[in-house]
Image (cartoon, rainbow, N blue to C red; front, side, top):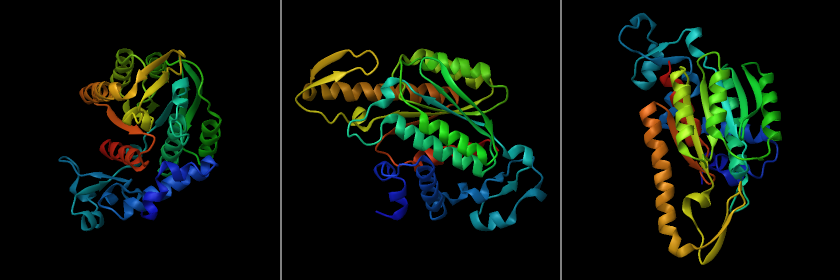
Length: 298
């Protein structure tokens, strides 16, 4: 395993207790990997550029970048470069679940959100946080100052899962709060009726916001590694169900695939970035998604 891969693996991150160090560790590994890969076009040195499009002034083409990438980029003006970000964190009880007692879904979300906050502040993008279960419970307004990272990390480090989910209602509240076009990054397992959630995300899109949906499930929720008779419990209602895991596996895996497919399809139709993740996956996939989205807004 290369050093870069090691930086980005959840089980390595779990051993670092301080969130600021976790986040820096992830970002450092990620940026190191970008510079060493074909993705270097998305790395920080190009954050001030966007692809040349017909109508741009050819005098603005950056020939140094062309020499490196063989693509035409123009230097962006200051007003274009900043994007206001909101990290929207689901704190409902189901986010506490972990099968192997490594990172819970909330722990994974917090590490990822902290790393994204570092990336955004590094690029002078204002970033804020909202948290919710059945409604919005915390709101940290976006800022791009260096001290904002401390505010974000201290809020994220205190988060604990509690209560039942109402993602749809919370996102409708968020849409009403936002005054300027923003990039809303949602971290949730989405274990609720999809209809109101999809409708609320559409409302955000219609309000002129970009949305990235990080759909975070536990690795066991995706792979169903159980066998024999198992008792499954709903973390929010405490309802228990005993099932024969071997007989149930095929139906379960089909259900999960359909669940994700519904979101994939609906998000695609609404112009929302859908990123299915599980808690065993390295963090680079999600960070790349943010940079691609940022690049395409130029």
